[in-house]
Amino acid sequence: MLGEIYEGKMVIFVPEIIKIRTMKRKILTMLLAAVVICQAGLAVNSVKNLIPGNGIELQISNVKSNALSKAEARAIQKAERIEFRNQKRLAMVEKFMTKKMAKKAIDFKDPVNKWLWFGVFGWGAGLLLWIIAGSVFSGGIGLLASLAWLFGTVSFVIWLVKKFGDV
Image 1 (cartoon, one colour):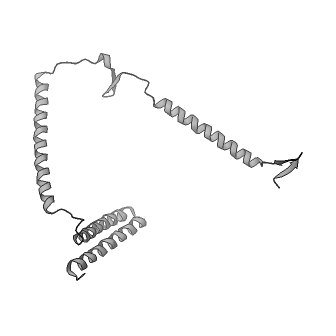
Image 2 (cartoon, rainbow, N blue to C red; image 1 turned 135 degrees about the vertical axis):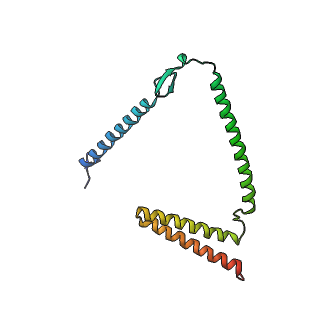
Image 3 (cartoon, one colour; image 1 turned 180 degrees about the vertical axis):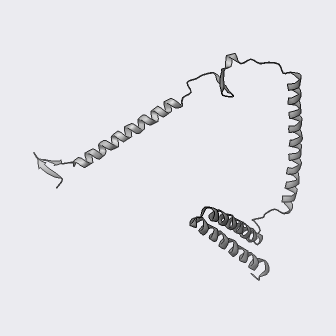
């Protein structure tokens, strides 16, 4: 029995092991709080008005601004021209890709052809997972690879039935 009646009141005796566990819990909680507070205090940047520069920190008030020399100005203009040219090329490639993708886009809204794409992606994922499983010798990834192959095969069969069957 955990308690006795003492002067008309029920008195419950708490075993010593529970007291020790609660003491340990309180101590660990206080230690955790102290660690969090110390980490927060260390995370505050105590050095103000500094700019990092190649491992050397210079105060902002000591940084001088110099006019650019002719060679530096030419180098900057050349870099800007190259950047502009690259942006134009990227715009052309983007335009070309949007035209090509518009013709051969993957259409998941099509009730028949979406199964073909599910099959292609399933087989692709199966192949990728199979290669990863072979390189890390993992049975779990191998199981996922098998499931991806199975999903791809089932999707391909569904596409064949829908495309060439009477359904």
